[in-house]
Length: 303
Image (cartoon, rainbow, N blue to C red; front, side, top):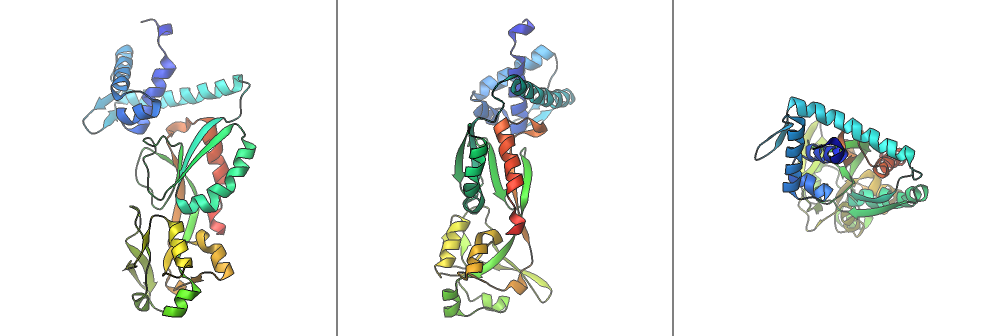
């Protein structure tokens, strides 16, 4: 087959997506092809190059040494190609639909309030925002960027840290008037401790008292699917909740919530990251613009 008859940039883009997504099926969902079509494309690419690029097994793909070189150089080529197209085009501004997934507290306190400023600066971008405290599959949900709180698991995703936030146990004055303010972790055992019912929720509340660390199990008579719902239950006086400091900053200042057992707070920090698919810097301009915007405008440390 003559070289001019081969869409080499298209082949390269699919191959890079296969490696970064970890398989044919995930890559197929991302590029709108069938898994068999993606597999055949990679096979044709290997045949044309005269070398094996990936070793296939039932569970995973593993790059060969030749595949590693081809992938690394391919990522750079695609990035250069995209930049060249932007430079040659009269439409150099970010454009298109940008699908963003975020946990509910971050969405309410940062993402939604900041969205107007981003869209004012990038009028050709359309934001598609989904808020959930469940960890989603980015490729399956066709998501460009996901904001996640807590420890990062090993994956093929790239992460940019947005900051970290302290965790606080809080309660409404009405609840504490009925049940008294606890002064030790032992007294906390008799309080209604509200918890979350999503998969990444911690099994208990870490505490430090008299130089010893412990985790107090959650025993409340209500659970919620996201952090903002827990905040509302706490504001209603149902029980105590352990929430991110940025969630309750205004409530604490207004006296709607009170800190509980701060002298037993272990000082743990929950980190927040923006995660995305795009090793090697190959990113659509709209994705890169929004990542930079988040890094520049989100300041969790002040909350």
